[in-house]
Amino acid sequence: MITEVFILQKVTLILGDGIGPEIAEAARRCVEAAGAAIEWDIQHAGSDIMETQGTPLPEATIRSIEQTGLALKAPITTPVGTGFRSINVHLRQHFDLFACLRPCKSYPGVRSRFNDIDLVVVRENTEDLYAGIEFEKDTDAAAELIDWINAHSDRRIRADSGISIKPISVANTERIVQFAFDYARKYGRRKVTSVHKANIMKHTDGLFLEVSRQVAQRNGDIEFEDRIVDNMCMQLIQKPELYDVLVLPNLYGDIVSDLCAGLIGGLGVAPGANIGAGKAIFEATHGSAPKYKGLNKVNPTALILSGMLLLRHLEMNREADRLEGAVAAVIAEGTSVTYDMKPRRDDPTAVGTREMADAIIAKM
Ligand code: NAD
Image (cartoon, rainbow, N blue to C red):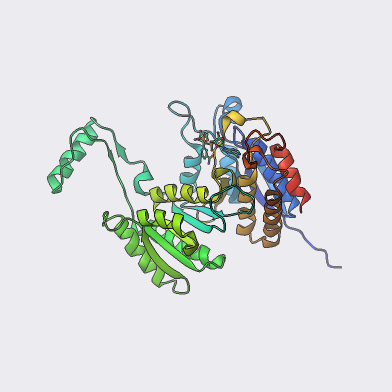
């Protein structure tokens, strides 16, 4: 007798804080209803667990991601000024999640100025002006650096300046551009566009462009082109249909991914992922919206669609299609959707987070 053995894929589910636990629960239920054979390891991070365990990122959460290699993560608050530093940034650095992936796709029924958008933004996550190498105005280090630059450059930096450093390396550009090509190939996309400001920043963006071209030569089966970032922003508004997969250094990637989220109707529907070698964390683009905590009010779509990206990453394509189809159907009907998807924000027919998830599950 042949016995069929079912292997469950282990995935860490991080509940986060603010609206996190509510949307995490909605996303978990929807992913399960799609038929995905997933065993969740439920873990915590953020201000709620800080209150009970004295740390916003328990060792058990890190260990779980180390073991599973995969997480679906609800948003986590980053307190301004005092408090702990960003857990989101810490997780990206700890696991070297060098690629931030933001697929931006229109779903009929979402209120937006644009329709038929289907873009993928691949943002380098580890270097550029975002690397956090900064020198505060009026410190000894800033003064020393300014003196050195003034001695070695034909340009002058004023003494009352603060300085942020923009490193861009060959190795990290190679791996992000190769990631973009691999993604394009795996998901049947036709073109990769490298975005830069190489005409002005020749030794950083210029290097990004040069390495992009070298990587493109090794990936001749996918079309390649480049665009200067300001022109790219204008073209994304005027003719987004010309573009497919965009690969960008960290700072431009941050800005352009929000621009593209705007094209598809905003943060409530924008999923994402941070991916490294052998590890990936899937999460919504939006934050923890603390003012809505515990109100069963916010839109769970972005985290549910992040769950859909997780399923595609696992090549559970049948389940991913089922989940995406159900989300699209509920949005298109426009009945069982949260307040932000109604024509007026005070629409009394808006449903809660839980009820929108119920409606999605009912479509599968
Ligand atoms: P936010 O995205 O949490 O909320 C901004 C506004 O967007 C909210 O007030 C709400 O009106 C709306 N909104 C957000 N998510 C929504 C949803 N699912 N449904 C309906 N409306 C929604 O941005 P913020 O207020 O700037 O940030 C709050 C906290 O989240 C900050 O501490 C920030 O650092 C953190 N944050 C975390 C992540 C993450 O965990 N990856 C990402 C962004 C921000």
